[in-house]
Image 1 (cartoon, rainbow, N blue to C red):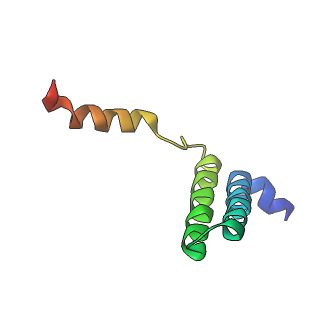
Image 2: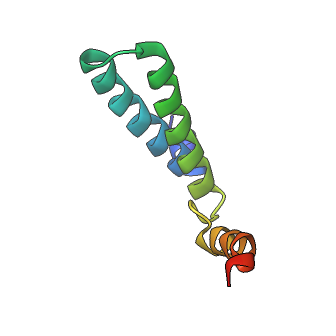
Amino acid sequence: MKELWEQHRGTTIGLIGGFIVGIIYLICGFWDALIFAFIVLVGYYFGKKADQKKEIIPISQIMDYLSQKWRMFR
């Protein structure tokens, strides 16, 4: 368990956070399994990005894409 925490801290936190939010949604919501799986997957994704020391949300790539897409309107 200690090795998991030391090597994959972001993934572990993301997975636990997604699991907790998913449980809350399961208790209160509809379409339980689908939304639960999606929330856990998003938590895992963010944690994995944190472990790899990458940007969680690549703002620069998004801005480049949008500026190229909307270039024709200028």
